[in-house]
Length: 275
Image (cartoon, rainbow, N blue to C red):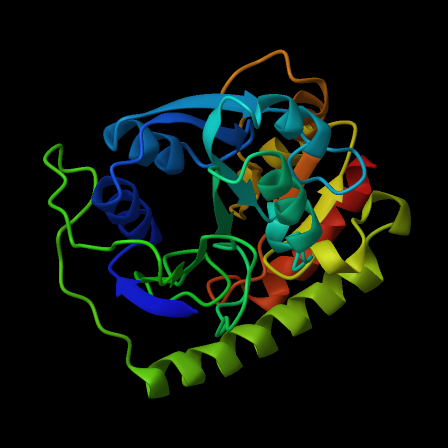
C-alpha cells in the first residue's frame, strides 16, 4: 500500500523520508540531474554516485546502475524530459539483485497523478515553478506503508519548513490551463520546426525538446531577441559520454503559460534561420 504525502517541495519529502528511516550509504543518480536533488541527498547524509544516460531511453543507464546495486543503499530514477514510461521491470530487477536497495521514482517533470501501485518505495511529483503543472510550489509523494515518515527540520536552510496544502479546485483549473496551453505551443513547434531535430512525441510534454549542432549559437540568438529557452541540466560531473552529448546539443523550448504563441512562432523563425 502507498500513502500520499504533501509538502512545500518534493525535495522536502525526499529529505524527510531519508532521515526518518536513517538511510545511510550510496545513492545512485543519473549524472544530468537537478543540483537541488543532489544537495538534498547530501544534506540528508548520503553519498552520491553518478551513472550515464541511456541512448535508447534518455533515462539512467540501467546496466551502469546494476553495476552499483550491490553497494548502493538508494537508487533515484528520473523521468528525463518528463517521459511517462513505466520502469517497474527495471525496479524489480534491482530488488531481485539486492532487496535492501531503496528505490525513488522521481516523476517531478511528469504530470502529477494518483499512484495506487509502484515497485518503487517512493514516487515523487512536483507542482513547483516551471514544472508540468506550475502552482509555484508544492510536492506530492507516495510512500510504501512499511517506511517511516516524519517532518524533520533541515538545519542548513536548503529546504523550507512550511505547512502546505493543495487546493484541489485550483490544481484542476491550472491543469486544464497548463495542458491546453502546452498543446497549442507544441503544435506550433511541431509544425514549424524540421522533423529531424525534434525529439519523439513522448518526450515533448514538459517542454518541447530539440537537438541541434549549434546549441549555444541558437540560444544566444533566442536570448538576443528577448525570448527564452534553455539547455537541460548540466551533468554534475564531466566524462559521461551520453550526458555530455545531450547537454551539448539539446535545447528545451518553453511551452508553459509564461510563453505566448507569438513568442513560440518567433522562436521557430530564429531556429530555422540558423539550421
